Image (cartoon, rainbow, N blue to C red; front, side):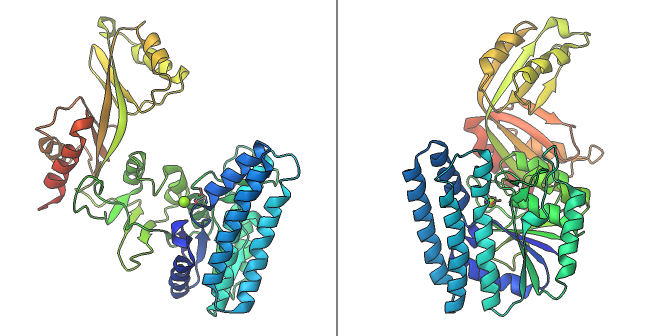
Length: 439
Ligand code: ASP
Ligand code: MG
């Protein structure tokens, strides 16, 4: 059995829902995880904001608008009158439930209930549509098996036993549908796995049932080997190691968050990124196997600030780096890249919120200089140190670009370069030409 997850845009309209329905019906007995229709969760956040601010009119108006959108979708989605009636009843009951919150106090607890309605509606609608197609789908309520523990971490044992018990009850189903994102907390209250959490749901379910594969369906054909906004003719990467995917995730490859795929990685379940618009395309396979000797992708991260701390006292001293790191820790700022020499250290941050305070503290230890508006260019692939020539190839491609920092050796999977913002597009193109063209 596989787990197939469809994001908000994949179920964002009646048309898209019909395509997904066809696709899942063809693929047999799998567990289908759905997000809310696109835009819904944002609107639910908006409704909650009105309710926090006691602007009941604002909340009601927004609820009405969203409800109208759903009624339109229902009209366009179903052929049969009875399906329309059933879906209308389901969806209206969710909206009426939201309206009930306009009368009382509003806290985090009520907000979580509101945020859960999006996935409850999209799955109910899809389930009714599957019946119309003559497909016997069974709705597995995520609130009955998806749960976090007292540390707000998914409770893998609980999920596994509850989900498998539910599946055992419905062995004659053609397929199963469940809600992404939503769960209960350790106290049984409605909660969620944070924004974008449907991928996490899919990964947790995959681990719980020891799935053959987890498929993440979006509207792009997998991870590309370079940024299509700046480089022409990028190609989807056919396969990546989980570690490579994690490196790329930091660089804005938003399709997959490393935490979300961790259960899949640990349980050795392959994750495949696929495109609902092009269902036959291969997409990107992410797994624990390494196809050796290949550079796979290039990515960039903007708005980087480099900080250099130089000190004669660092020479032969120990404890210097600890003091430097403590400054960043105390100002809750993550360090991304780091390079050192005997007399200094350079590091980068992507958040300048506490920069002044950080600089102030660092000046106790040495001379501090900063470079703003920098970009990290990251080259990902099988960069194990024993392999020859790969680092040289990447560096050679960038020979015309001034490079502020180079970081290699932190993992077997990447080499990073820090360059100026104005050199970013050129750097991405040079790497694309030299690493991926006429391979
Ligand atoms: N609907 C939720 C969100 O928009 C969860 C998800 O789509 O993954 O964040
Ligand atoms: Mg999403």
